[in-house]
Amino acid sequence: MTVENDVSIQNLAGLLPPSFTLGVAAAAFQIEGALSADGRGPSGWDAFAEKPGAIIDGHSPAVACDHYNRSAEDVALMRELGVDSYRFSLSWPRIQPDGRGTFNEQGLDFYDRLIDQLLEAGISPMATLYHWDTPLPLEHSGGWMNRATAERFAEYCAAAGRRFGDRVAQWVTLNEPASVVLNGYALGTHAPGQDLLFEAFPAVHNQLLAHGLAVQALRAESVRGGIGVTNLHSPVRPATRKLRDRAAAAVFDIMLNRIYADPILNGRYPASLVFAKPWMRSFGRIPDKDLLTIHQPLDFYGLNYYQPVQVAAGQGPHENLAVPAEAMVRIPAHQVPFAEYGTTGFGWPVAPDHLGILLRELKDRYRDALPPLYITESGASFPEPEHVTGPIDDAQRISYLAGHLHHALEATAPGGIAEDVDLRGYYVWTLMDNFEWAAGYSQRFGLVHVDFDTLERTPKESFYWYRALSRARKLLAG
Ligand code: BGC
Image (cartoon, rainbow, N blue to C red; front, side):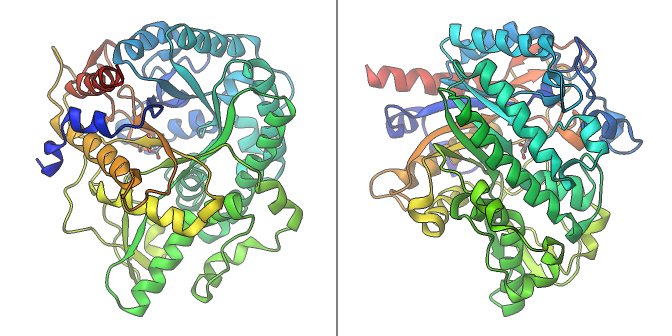
């Protein structure tokens, strides 16, 4: 479909540095199901998914991939795939049903088993502590709008560190605080479904604080693994060279990227541009000690990259949004589609070149403050059948993954545009088709097809392609 098809497995394998991690990623709420089994408490997402119209076609997360009951089968699939590492998330409401106080032994046991199964299969566990499933009682007391949630989060992280700290190789505190704020609190398309727009900033700060407190809590438990965080980065381009479009793009860059990365990596919020002032009015005064807490030394930085964003000034329709939000039309700038790129099932531009450019920009922006990087998510959905009889030929996904990995490796190789970036790994989003948040089961991102009637897993051609890559690099290494 594109030139990326020319990227051969041999070529890619040859570009992989010897200790580079090839992995797959997933998240508890998207795959586990078993929402009321064995003492798990409800999450904000359980409640949100029940609201009429919240999820496409009323799809329910109740069963998802039933991974809670099939983790052994799923780990066997990953062993066959030959990945070095699996990034999964711990479900806070499964481990601590009320979000405070008592821990649920059966929930802890589930992750004990999962981690042991992974280690037995020679797969290194990367555990994300928060991938969007806030315990419902905490959501009821304000969720991330309430500063106390950050303190509760640190207590839960300490317990996870105590229990799993001897075996987890890498810890990710938060997954994409930007998505939680934008979709969940500003636009209302994700849990908890609030459309506070610019008044949602406390949810930024409280999540960042939660990150800092979690790093401290894990260190206090002397966990053996490295500690990092995962941010979504969407490089922003102005639609034209006009000053008003460039200003709108700069404000979007702050909103999407910099208000999350700057405090974590530099210990300060981006100097608020004149244009951004009205957008940032709910920020209030930030205590310096909070910024010190947020600015923890990290062992690595997780980067999720899906798409660049093109922005023009003025109100307008927001195309290529996963779920168009009513509230977006009130924003004095809008997204404009890229003419030059093909699109995924979600309508997102396929722009692998922007991954290399993003790595360059991150290094320019954060310099020595940028820790070693892992691309903790990269992948795409395409229209695919609900039922299959064998491996489907998902050539577009292979092209997508090959293209993104290739651009990342080439950019960071000697002589590449981001050769000074220490890139250590790439995690495909995702192992298997799953509950894609507000899009329910309508967007399939997996290397493995899941039939949501029978729960049967069937590897796609992309699974065999990734396996061949992993094998080729092992052969090359001798
Ligand atoms: C999230 C995943 C999600 C993926 C595709 C990422 O922002 O971390 O949970 O499934 O995007 O939408």
